[in-house]
Length: 621
Image (cartoon, rainbow, N blue to C red; front, side, top):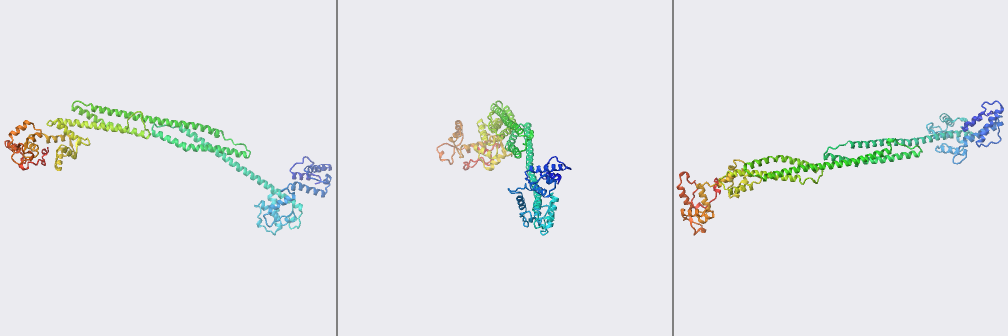
């Protein structure tokens, strides 16, 4: 210490500063004085008050002065910086010890002397700061030296606190040296304070890293989400660019529905994502600004500016897509309208042409019949063409087409008009066929043919040019031919040839058989009886009511015998002629082959029964 070198080393260690150039190996007294003065000047420059001390005291080795100087240095550089709540260094150091050991019941720190002689205070300081080094609860509280030795050893080995004291200097000593304890405990204070500073610094670093980790994660999330959003936007634009239409309303409507679904779903998700990304980037910049760090700028291809550019492009594509879909749907609807109109107008023209052809028929029956049959063969293609029109109308309905400026026709109207044309052709065909049948029936008057045909048409409900059994029966009844049910059934089977319907030709032939004037005895006798209304005689009035010419009446009255039997009160006073006797006389003069059939001439009392007989269809007229 006398050469000043150790003092300079002590000051550099205590202050952490360099004192500059000095004589490291002084041999001359003057060099030692220079070293001592350098140290004293450094001490005075730090504000340490010193009295009655000079360089010669250090060089001459004045022990008392030197020890006082060392304590002053320790107090200045080791203890004086301990300042807790404005207290002095000693009070601050004591308060720090009391607070650290307050939770230990066996420890009570009152001073820097006897409070430390059991070693528990040192163990408590170790346990509170480094619980991994010592288990305070397991200590033998009565082993003062052992506890103190353990504390000194752990402090030196694990924490780096030098052993300034020996166990014997403190353990079980009634009043240990206060200054020595203060100096040693000050090392503990600085060591643990430094440890706390390091821990605090570590916590700050950890907090910073955690915060920055959040920022880094936010940046990574931003870049990933932005890249994904831009990818989806570009993909959607490319899909719209490459999209094509099949030309059908169903396809156009499906693409319109898909576009509407995009606007209701995916686009809204993208709008929300776009807003979230802008907010996320703002949060990143705010968080970095909190730590006064350089703001985050995303890559140019992931910036908000790039997003806005791509979004603007997407919006333009979206508008073009909507216009294209609407235009395509309009074109398809117009095409459907024109397609339906062209087919409907052509179909209507064909029907009109056919109707005009039917109404304009003239000439021989055979030629007309040939022409009508040819028209009938053209009906099947019209049916198929009408199905095509129905298909187009169905497409129009599916396309929600409610008006068509290209035509006034509808499918229902055309179907109805086709039904009318079919009916006209069928009726005309039946009419011509029936006319040819009637033409061959030379033994009927035109009036009779007209009447029979009119009746046949009336009861031919389904225009099949044939009568069912009930229709046949009703037709005969309307002509005055009434038969029993069994007779009618027999006539029907005979007339139809065993089939389930009677054709027009068969009907006419039946009527010819019934009405044809064959001049047979049976027919003449039956005619007289019908003229007489079932009476056994006939009067001139009866003959006139039957439209018999006057000259014929006059001739009959001259050749028929008078009736002498019972008569009707209404006929009394009038000439009455016995047509039964007249017919008997006439029949007796004929050849045997022309004899009156059995049952024709009845008893005069039964002549009044004029109803038809079963099996005799001519009796019905």
